[in-house]
Length: 155
Image 1 (cartoon, rainbow, N blue to C red):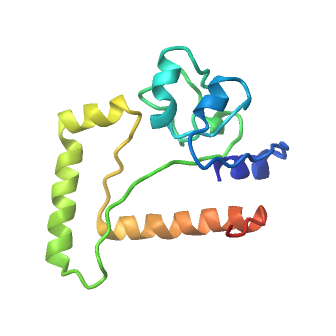
Image 2 (cartoon, rainbow, N blue to C red; image 1 turned 90 degrees about the vertical axis):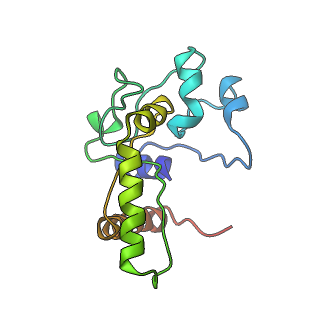
């Protein structure tokens, strides 16, 4: 999806090669020239010099790779991030979801948790349930446009 967004915004013609498993052996072996990879999968290879990071796809530079530019520095408006969230059924009482959210935000603010996440290139994005709902809606709209533009169909 990151590559499809890049193609749509730049007009660069790239061939998508789907992998059922890891792409890393082919990338490290030179059979694949470039990938859009979650930072957590490639960070150790970048740190040891086995991979060359060209850019990060996030909106801002990453603490784990501060000298690596963002794609947006040369393709204005480009942003693609892998993210994780925690959800609960719609009928969950507000006091329970609010308590869970409060505990998660407190843990994300803990220096030990922050350091562990930074070590793997993860950036916490604490939000309220309402903010997360808006974020999900925006991400769904954004990636839906990419899917339609690239004419991606379920396989």
